[in-house]
Image 1 (cartoon, helix red, strand yellow):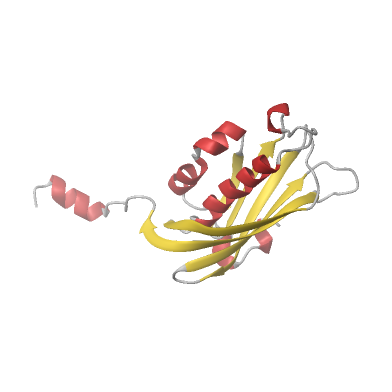
Image 2 (cartoon, rainbow, N blue to C red):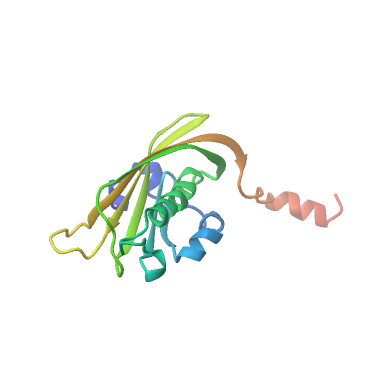
Amino acid sequence: MSAADLPPQSREPVSPGLFAYLATDPVADLLGIVFEDIRPGYARARMPVTHRLLNAPGAAHGGAMMALVDVVHAAVSNSHGTLAVAQDVHTEFLSAGAEGDVLRCEGVEISRTQRTAVFRIDVFADSRPGHPDGKLLATALARVFRIGTPLLPAAPVPHAAAAEEAGA
């Protein structure tokens, strides 16, 4: 999916402050997950599959892939700037990731109401022969409860801040 495929409200990136807030995730940092794009209702990140993320048979660990899905789920579900918390994530593993893969994970909002939202989150292995758009390794359907609390403090109104400084 490209930015051109997104609904009009999702074509503009979130503010730099919100991007930094959503991309600063300790689990993402631990696993080497890096966000590339966050827009209202959309998020994309990548994670390299290193030897530390393999299971006993030598494939990408399902838990690592689920963590990637969860980190992207958190970003896309909070991309409107208000707090949302996960209620359910159902993941289907379709193919195994391998050491050396760079996994691309994209989350897209498919429904949003005042209180809930649903997202589709896909994990691809790019650079797989015969798969120019990436090989789909996993797909998830995820639901959140939208609490609605703002994630970032409201920016002060410029004239109000000036009035405070003047002692008004």
